[in-house]
Amino acid sequence: MLHKAVANPVEGNVARRRHAGRMALGLLLVIGQTGGLMLMTERAAHAYVDPGSGLLTLQMLGASLAGGFYFLRHKLRKLVSGTAKVRPAGPAVSSSELRTDVAASVPDGPARA
Image (cartoon, rainbow, N blue to C red; front, side, top):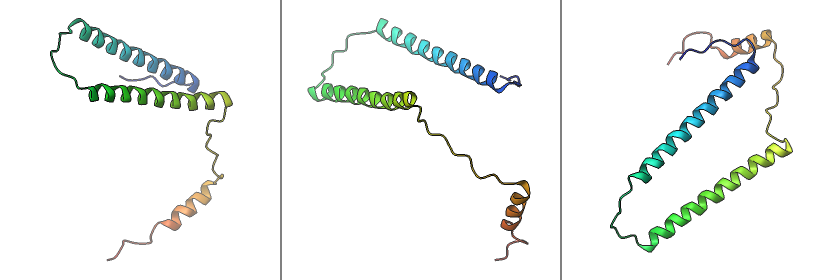
């Protein structure tokens, strides 16, 4: 799909966010439909599940919840405090300085073994 060039970068960011929102909504819809189909076609499974499997499942669920809360806590803390990492601007380099730096790093001739 070809995208139009946007003169205003803010409009481009809004369009990208809107597109990402639609993609997320589509993904949630597919997951919901898949889950619904799995529930509608459920059959009895006459199988043995040992107690260790249940505890392992419980441990995975607990670890996922704890990790999710930890991740969200740090994201919310950054959002509220406004201390998101900002990359410092590098030193200003003129084009003539850049040319001399590049010229100095290029060897004079072909490399000899």
